Length: 123
Image 1: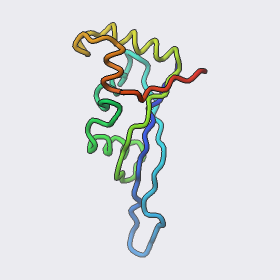
Image 2: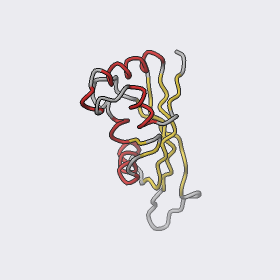
Image 3: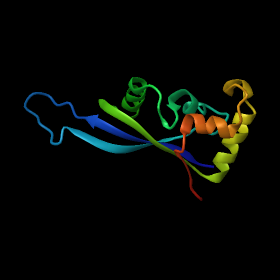
Image 4: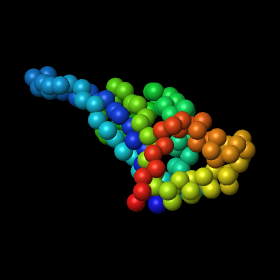
């Protein structure tokens, strides 16, 4: 069972006087392992994403800065990449936690937070 949140992140290199970097900003892909459904921060998608986009740009930049330890100018969510076993477990965890999602179905919850940004990959 495997899943990762994938983001496009633009970082800025800050340099001391007398040092230059070119280019000063770089866009890169960042993959963050998703916690198993029902464990740890498994509600990351609910708390961070809305309709396949980051819900709060400032918060997303702060998260990315904590992952990368460099200043982040922009963060864009790309996809939740998961295998079939993770998707099945995620849907089961959502269905088992109706209070967390106002009783909505797993399909509705995933669409509301991730839009069409779910990519199922085979093992």
